[in-house]
Length: 90
Image 1 (spheres, rainbow, N blue to C red):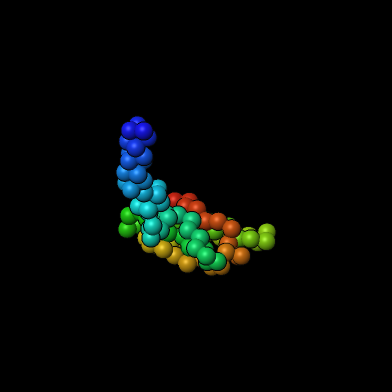
Image 2: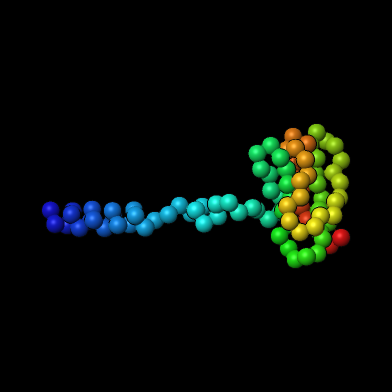
């Protein structure tokens, strides 16, 4: 019985110290392609330099290139934008 009591106490202590893996990243924005809800963003986390991104559109419409500054840039609605990725400097 002592062993079960000791194990139960240890498990209870561990349960109090374990946190979810995502707890440290709550509220942070992803770098690069950053869809949020129904809106498409590109978040350039790099230095102060602008970067050229390729924006891929939905419904077989041609993609386009766009220069973006550091920070989060609104690209449009997710039903219009499939993906965006960095090509290089502007």
